[in-house]
Image (cartoon, rainbow, N blue to C red):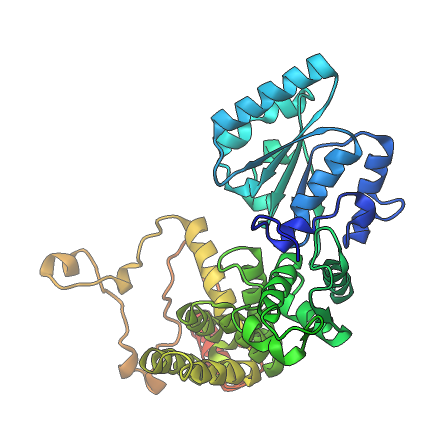
Length: 439
């Protein structure tokens, strides 16, 4: 392997033309939008949205090269408004003196605040620069509307196994920039590397380079062969894709919640294991399970809430990994339990009634009457103590403000314990109606 002055293999192997670019066929194959833009020789401003290692930076470089534009990269982590203004000034000079366009590439553009994003908008608007922003975050949340209105969003996908295997094979064989035959990598090893890389070309090439460095210490007598079993130790520290707070995080917690709601214990176990594997805070998962117990199981099985709380407490006492099983037990129980969102819907409707009625007064018979003055004002007058009534139910008595009237929020489902709750509530509400109508 040649001396590349410490330049990582992943950086050395960046393709030098769009023809060599691997992946994103949905954007770059014949008739697709980016291919048409390159064919016309004119780029428009765009946001490249995709996971790490899918080729955002490389694609931006190649697009600029394909239309013979100057490529000016900036990192939103390090750059500020001053850097943007300098880049724009240079772009203006190039346009005036050499009639050459400039692609202003902002890596991790979502890290720019609103003022920083606004700084280059006029120059995108008048064509001084063509903006290409790269982000792993959902642009609809991470970027302001003014920027989004001036740039088209393209979604890049994680690389498939076949794409990654092709990249690995080229890196092994490349005489100029790659490993140039210093190790032998068979199809099984390429497949395993691709699996470990999990859609990320940078991870695949980094693992390959580390493996090659280790293999170079093998005895002389031909290129050492990399074996599948040699990869396990290298890949132990490569968790599945997870960003602890971005879109992938929320997509996965959404999948966990919906699997439980959909009564799929298998789906619940998979997404719980996936998030724990990715480094999600177990306390967050425990809190979410408690929420699911109330929102989606509710009174169809009130034991679910207690079990979810017990699982949380068990995890706090046992820690990881022993406590993970308690969370798994709760997730499976919640998935298998009868479902009801009746309390969730009732609470939402009650909140709407509160907002609609404003500061409705507490009815006199429900008011506290601790003093003679309060009693003299009628507080508590007409209140019927339920325990003194037949069946401990004061039929016909209202517990809502007049402005709300006789609205009914809670409607139990016909699932689980709520079947019995619904039957009981139906009887009580019928007694109320009869008492109020005098029948």
